[in-house]
Image 1 (tube, rainbow, N blue to C red):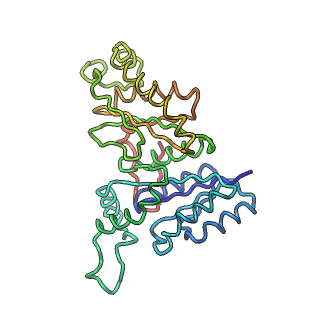
Image 2: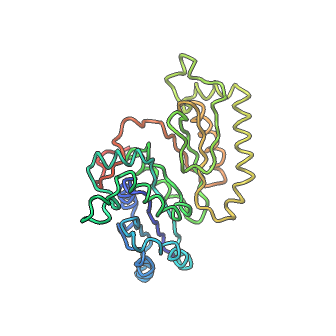
Image 3: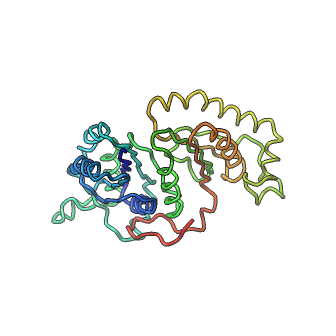
Length: 305
């Protein structure tokens, strides 16, 4: 039986520790801050020990050998391994806030402890880290944690790794344009031109998951047209993406508040595509104010979604 290996990488302060804890909860053996040069020996040891699930975190803390990682991953893919690469990211402003709140020092914030004048500030360190990780980011499934709470990130990670690794996993995600487009989305569709239940007093407090809102939206031809067009696009291109050995495809659908129209369309499309594809769904704005935020601190979150 082949080894399931999840490689967590990404920006410092983006929630990698939270992601590792989520993987640990699902039965993975987790190793944090593994030097890249030890990845292949670690894989060989895991196969020899007949380990089934391993998760490791590699990031800029191994700055000197990090450039070796893309080449190492090429060799890793030739072994008996189902490899998943997850890159956790967040907006620079969000990362600055997290580091400020936890009073942690960024791994790149001090290049020479004896030369204080040459120490880059936090924003400069973050941007330098982005440059160093750009190649890895291109190869990975990106998870933007800017607006995710710790428990939401845990749930998201668990849903991804529980999907069959040998098949393409299709993620539908609703979002609010007023809070920004998900940077990890492969395809983004705009539902703001559709009739808006927000202006119907009885429907305003509800969501696209409620039957009353669903019925109201289904009575409008424009809603059916957009749903049909998105579905037609995906039916045409998903097989090609699967042939290209893509592990994940995220389809983001947005409306103004991420409450009615986008939620309804995600529910409809997830139900339809779930018949033939491994399909997940997520509503980014739902219940987002009731949980603790993802922290730059390595401490384990205590709340649950």
